[in-house]
Length: 152
Image 1 (spheres, helix red, strand yellow):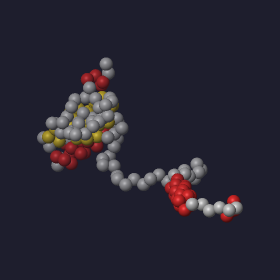
Image 2: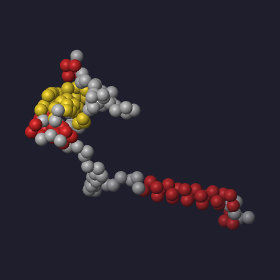
Image 3: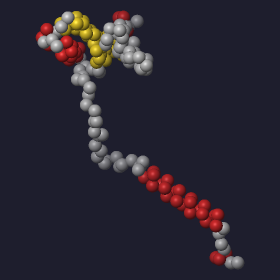
Image 4: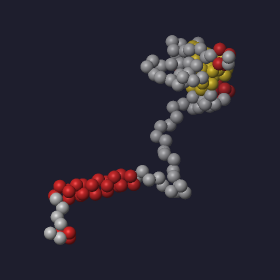
């Protein structure tokens, strides 16, 4: 038997074909992971959900926003909403002083605001982060901010 007429056992032939197929599949799968050239324009992904609430990062703007929310909730004219407290605070964690049951929060000091208003005979306690996120906090879940703004 000459070297050119040597036969490869069937098992070896199947393994070589399977190996070639696996390599081709692997390369095809990797092709989609290759990043586009750095100079190629890329559009930002579209936002699928609009913000749930208007955001503001300064105390006067936040006070207006939450006062309007309290007026809407109480059915009161926004001009009749009375601000009881509006101040910068430090919250003890990412719950902004209003933890929800069975949720976990970042364990770090969070700068923010506490705004309490009266509308239609009801008191509303709003807790906010410095980046403008805010929430109405029910009295049974409300936790006070850190004393002295979290300063030692």
